[in-house]
Length: 317
Image 1 (tube, helix red, strand yellow):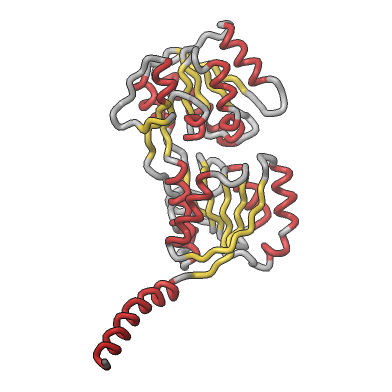
Image 2: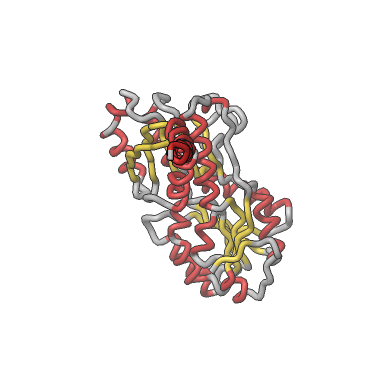
């Protein structure tokens, strides 16, 4: 009887001790989430991975709804809490959202950004390898040459339309880089500036649809406005020209191809960066991370354009 009781007690202890150890490793932290267009798949993956890494986070969210002024107002409303260091760290989405947040946070808490194309060009960090400020994070800045190397394996490009939103820093940087690639590779390029508060996008789509503007491919980079109207662009000209995007969101809008890190991978990478900082790492010395890019291809668009995707492509819809 005593032997059986002792044996049961030991088994119970073996069951309880690992659980106790796991609980002892959990770190309680408060994270301010600065969102640009509400919670996306990146934030869902971020929260899941952060919990797996032992961070028991309490989240305070502010959402810009893609409006810089609205975001600035919401951040100013909690400026006192930021000054009191109520948040152990700040998560930010996108270049504009990060720029606005940094203007209010002012190095009072470390900032981990996500979905930023060019952190140096956006003046968020001094360099990708050594940020030099309490800011680091995850980039989706796949070099333009690498993107178009992937796209031209699907279909040659002779005349390219580039859509860009001049109000978003990423878009301006990307347009110039694509122009450089086009010149080097003998591709005729037409750039068209579009903005969310006028008919500029509808006008250029009408020109392509009618044949007034003749191109065989169109490209839009990592730009939140253009990604948000991806379905509209596809509906207007997707059957006429090959559409290529700088983020996975374009594929969800029916575009032919995108060469970019997966959205969930970016959320996971941001969580890994955040966990390091919350456990004591110095963000000023923590390099900016680019998750492994993948070639995403729309099955439907590939069929429309008579394209057979490479074996390593990630096929969607």
